Length: 367
Ligand SMILES: Cc1ncc(COP(=O)(O)O)c(C=O)c1O
Image (cartoon, rainbow, N blue to C red; front, side, top):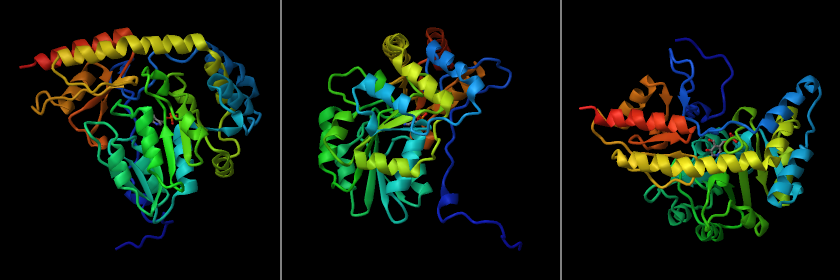
């Protein structure tokens, strides 16, 4: 037997199943249709691309570590105090930082059963125990979450609306979740898809942050703003949490081109409205066509849908995934989310939506 001599990570690290992103390539297909990662259908704002390019000759300079210009632009856009905003390299980084700062060995991190995968992974990475509360019909269940709060609970992480189910909690349900939590438990509301939601009873979380010391709202530039490749997100927090995040984050965690592109993107109202209108048109279109093919779809308020496939091995989600891939169309398998009968399909361009519906029509017609 050979003896292990190399460095050994902390207990639990090797139990983590690494996050696997959506596939981006298909052998033999030059430009696959990429509907696997909830990226923007229309791409970034041309103003954001120009701002990014304009910084190319300056990349020998460190960025402004406080990302002041970007925080000011976000503050103007959303009517929020820039002093209460912290930027991160994607909201992923902010999730990780919150977990690192507020949870550790022996603590519990609570999330909803079909919540974003990074919550459980991030909790395990800091030695905490992820606790999943069951859902009701692919909806976050406030009572189930509250029933699982213990003395050891440190953070409750909720995606609202949720990826991959596409469902959301209304203002009242979220307020009820918050009021059922002890004041020392942090409620992190991850509103990565907030910009797509068009419902009167929805609020991304800022109002709750304004009246509580234990709530944080997380946002991203990866979805409606189309800057996923740049890695840019932000958190709106009570002052004490801003202070904590600024202590644990890297001093230059956002690159200068990301700051510049983020400012341009958040100020490009026209591109924003175009992206929103595109989603508002194609989300119901795709949902209806999938239902018409006999694939039940949970009502989504995001830029993706989650059709359920039959159990018949010729028509199940796995077979559909492979069939679509042979047509150069990439979707996301959902077994890692505990949803093996489903595929998640991102809203792409109109042509891409027509192609995926045509291919699924063929797939469902196979004898
Ligand atoms: C709910 C949710 N939160 C956070 C993220 C991560 O976003 P970012 O690219 O800002 O790290 C995603 C990405 O898919 C997401 O779906």
